[in-house]
Amino acid sequence: MANYDAIVIPGGGVRAGGKLPPWVRPRLDRALVVAGPAFLMPLSAGTPYRPPPLDERGFPWTESRAGARYLVERGADPTRILMEESSFDTIGDAYFSRMTHAIPRGFERLLVVNSQFHMERTELVFRWVYGLEGPGANCAVDFEAVPDQGMDLDSLALRAAKEREAMEALEKPRKEIGTLAQLHNWLFTVHGAYSWKEQRAVPGWQAPLY
Image (cartoon, rainbow, N blue to C red; front, side):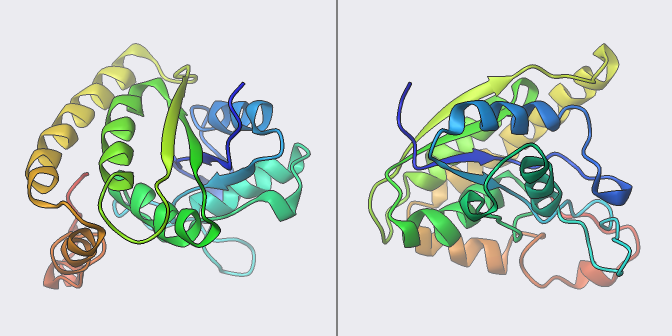
């Protein structure tokens, strides 16, 4: 088995009490199996489509925080967990994991573990973002898919349609953005989940899916 600096686990939702949906848990379970001495990196602040659930103190349950708790409850060393709590979509997953952890730590090889239904877009985005010119050492990224547990055929069909839509939306930024600096500018001036937009004040506003 390859030696990885970190196992990266994208989020996929969080429910009341910090509970994880059934399709997210296999990602974390697999990460625990393959990690060895590698860090575990659960990703994501949440989604722009709904507010996060709150804990008993009134603080948000991010997907990363819920994933970290799940890992620790199953024996992971808390000092080997690197949370990423800034991303709201797949581009953010890749960008913030690279900027927050991969570059400062000098990581050279990562494994991304995600559900089968989301793996094609995950691989497209991570290969793009981690291949952009920028600071830090080159970091190779491998991928492993886990089964789509807890999803019926109708739900998978809906997911597949959303994945196709998101892949189409990615074509333009992938053609126009070739450096981390350009991606930073686009994220914080154009992307609806990270830039300040007047739409944030409009009821029902939703950021575009990437």
